[in-house]
Image (cartoon, rainbow, N blue to C red):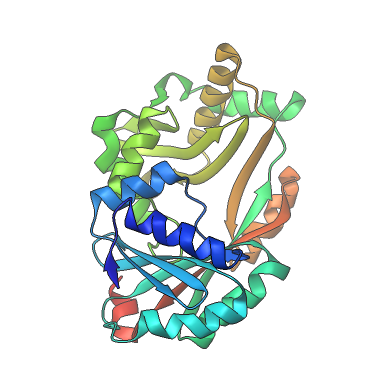
Length: 291
């Protein structure tokens, strides 16, 4: 295994591409994002057989595994070289993203090498609110709309802490603090502050007219159908309209294990579009419980 930098990792990637096409990968970051991870933390890579692996530190307690491989069979054969000598007390988390028929053999390859599936997230296509639905949202949001605002960089740690209160760093795709700051600076985090704390928050990503909603959180002490999330939604809708930002598609993510929540999504005509994220972990039971 070799310490990664922007030269040797991409050189290894190009060299392997010349030998075999990559049909299996979870490295969907662009080159700029990969370079940023490599520059800002101690990352390692390994070329083994028909696969290339990249390990990056995650949340100070585990590593994230990115892989490029010729096939699920090659991934199965090449993973032992990466895992040999690894300390199970320092878990490795990885994700498999795509349609079920393509994900299934990749997940199986990882499970054959000791990874366990910890959670599956389903991508939901959410209809853009219009007409009476929008009128109802605006009515429920009225008491809180003036409180809604974009988060600022000084809110980053509070945003991170609230996400950690509600979501698990293995089961969910939780961003690191630097990613949160970058998202805030893009005006992709809206908040309502009450009693000196963030009472409600929407963390999303907007690019090329496609909006991905990642975290909708109302702090437990402020829950009870009081319209806080509707206020954030209306604040965003008004902002997009004012700025001439057209939303072509709106996606959200739902935990597949929460069947009641999935069923309730049908009330808003949200549907699973076939894309899922399978989050897996390698490591001993003590390591899993500690992350």
